[in-house]
Length: 209
Image (cartoon, rainbow, N blue to C red; front, side, top):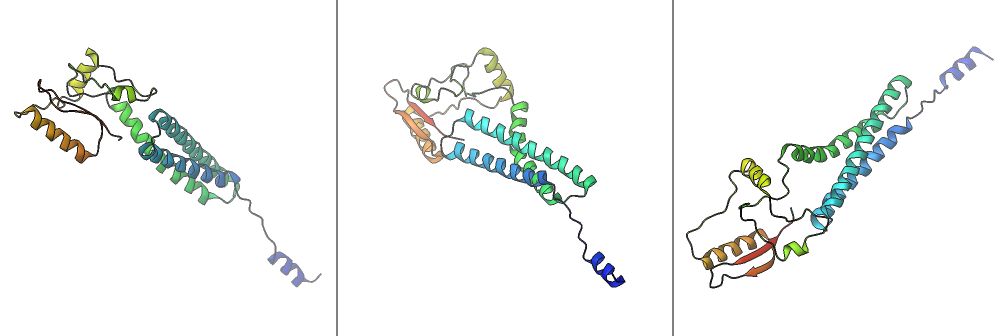
């Protein structure tokens, strides 16, 4: 063996660098649960997915993305000390996971900071009575029960500007204005009773937010 042969063998040597397999899985997990979160929001808004089911799916999505971020962080530590490749996948998993967690964290902050009310009425002392909407409401939804004195006091303290609107107009005129406003908002009307001799009309309408 000549010196040139030794140089050629040394020059063509390869050092195999392994890829951190968990980095790729962290990115896949983060992308999957972000897609699940987006699909949940779309189905809840446009396809009638129930709110309890949507909340559960959002919780599952948030947990999955949090796990992906944790796996990515552990993978980065392993890459730092072991010299494996895959840091790009880890950073992608962390970015996707944090972006996806922003929405659940935002609504969780609302749930913590806002008063614990499931219903806000303009006149809690004389609560609205929903005859048809009450029967159509899903069984797993919050019940439309009249607020008790504690909830009424909490609403008055938290939302002092919410109250009934008093208009110096005839009942048919007010009824026409309300119907026009509901039409512009695109609400779905299920009960529409014109004011009778008593001057009392009734409109029950619903909308998804």
